[in-house]
Image (cartoon, rainbow over all chains, first blue to last red; front, side, top):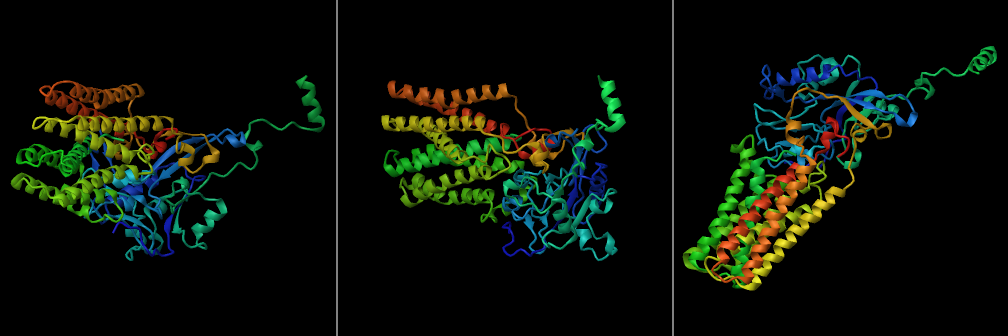
Length: 243
Length: 312
């Protein structure tokens, strides 16, 4: 069924991504590709990988933005922005699926694609405002972030490796994985402390993942290159020289 | 959005096919279309052919057409699934009606009524596939379903009048009805174009990255240097001047020429009517095809906010 779970558990597994510490190194992108191309589902294929027009399906993309910070009169900043499935509570990619291939797990909220049922119509990708789904040009089915379901529950992996590949690999510790349905979990506390936000909440998709906004400079002045005017003798000298 | 030729053809052809089914069934029910073997062959066969060609075309863009049967299962939540169910369901009364009509020259009123309702329901489901998609503001628009229904009915009626004119004289009321339907359909489309041109953007880049109060924001580094599925599928752009020109072409071919053909048919003798109406029907199909291509090409997806579009 592509209906959303009628009795979802309180558990909402997801990612918290720190836009303050992400350095845009693309390590999460590469590890995601590596893990998911060699996992139990069909490979995350590329077409013409060594040719003139290489393209391929990736489940995680990091975009670089310039944000003006206009409200603080600051100089603005670069924001590296990792983009992947947000495992929405109100996931339209699930309800639009005509075959039941796209589904949301009741037990932890992870949104998955059953590749054996997918007809590759692409409607779920259209229904996602966040661009989380990409068609596999070789398997001809839709691919998306699985939250590394084959890692997080994998009894064959050491306990500390049972987290998504992107989280495991992040050298800046900008990615966090946990239960956002539990207000006392580490990730929920982090979101509360840093005022984490969902993306475009007004659309009503109710994403599970949260993004932590870049920290503000301690004061607006700290971001300007100008020295504060000195007082005392130096101030007198400064005013004298300025005349 | 990428205007996939299979989908553009599908929605135009099946829309006209269902419109023609409605025209023939309603015409027979009210007694203005005679139920004869010839009229059945001339009206119902092309209708079923258009519908079937459209539906076959729609499977061409699937990655796995051999699994298409699965698409009938999720009608509770998916408009695409509902469309599939409605499309197949329409065949049942339509084929019963066509069989009795052609073989026994008998009208089955229940089958004809069911055909009308299911044909309209199928067009509505097709439109709702697009109208239900919130990330594409130009599709998530209240006028999308009425426009699909009106253009399907108008193009089907024009084809029906052109075909029927070869068999029997078309009366003034039928021609006037065609003119009203056609004009109403394209007036709705005109209203839709005005509305999307003046619509405020739904979101900007700063909203897309969750930092609305920190904006404006601008893409400075793309995540990849080559094309990908997202850009191929949702990054289609059409130049503004081409858009305006194509809208005019669609309007002239879709409305102006067929409307002139209907008016001419009202004034001239019956000998010219079949030829004049055929030209009108061909033009309105062509105009609807251009309109449908534009429906895709003009639509922008919110995901482009992550790829350098300032607002959508």
